[in-house]
Amino acid sequence: MRVLVTGGAGFIGSHTVVELLEADHQVVVVDNLSNSSLVALERVAGICGRAPAFAKVDICDKAGLRQVFAEHRPEAVVHFAGLKAVGESVEKPLSYYQNNIAGTATLCEVMAEHGVRQLVFSSSATVYGDPETLPIREDAPLGATNPYGRTKLFIEEMLRDLHVADPSWRIAILRYFNPIGAHSSGRIGEDPQGIPSNLFPFITQVAIGRRDRLQVFGDDYPTADGTGVRDYIHVVDLALGHLKALERLAAGPGLVTCNLGTGQGYSVLEMVKSFERVSGRKVPYEIIARRPGDIAACYADPSMAQKELGWTTIRSLDEMCRDGWRWQEGNPKGYSETE
Image (cartoon, rainbow, N blue to C red):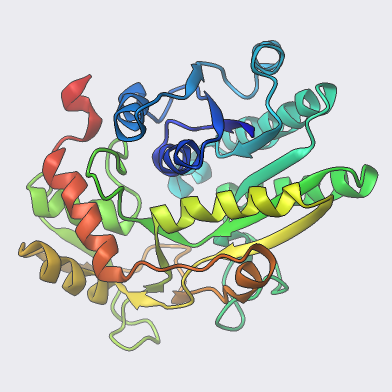
């Protein structure tokens, strides 16, 4: 299958491109490189023995997208491109609404113009807000607590409306929980710009010496050790979920919404202990005040993905930490050392 991957040079996108290429799909990556690196795609080519096609195009650029569709004639789209930092979204909401929502609308318009109606969308567990019950099922109440989450929620609604208007669309909405880790080769991984907003890359940067200590936001939550609990999923397991979603869409029209998580929650301190165990490095940390908007616990009920997609996770927390550390240890400054 010819698959167009928006945001394919980013963390989750690059790992999904690897799995698509290794499954013998033809891949074209569209990325504006605002928060990603071409080095990642060069390394993807090294891992797979062949490179994806690449076009530096912003998803808000309708003319640029039209040219890509005309040249490469994709049969399906996996849509990762979007701004993704919660804190930044609070500071710059218009940028998030413009890029994420308007960009997705533009992408869907161009898809329809070219008769492409298979779409896998990268959504997020942030659409659940502060969950009323755990584990979280797909039919749980929706209600994001920040502009980033709201863009994901609005895009989901837009895609549901699109499918109602034209049932020939085949759409998979995948709600990610907390992707971490890296490809087992250590060649590609997570390379956040500036201060990491997520826990795991902050831990690895402390371990490699780029940061002094980890700040743990609160130890007074109603959890086993007082720190926040999240559902961490290996990025390769997550990538494989997209291949399963494409297989599901190939079977016929419809819209499916699935959580991609392990169903297991781990606290911040459990994550630190696992990382220290597999890396042999100590991770000094300090407890500070809770961060506004953070919730106590969030983990998935992944049974829908198993039923609808035939997908389940297979990699443990220790494997996530080991692979993530292999990437960070081999690339202390991320991709910037080779750029």
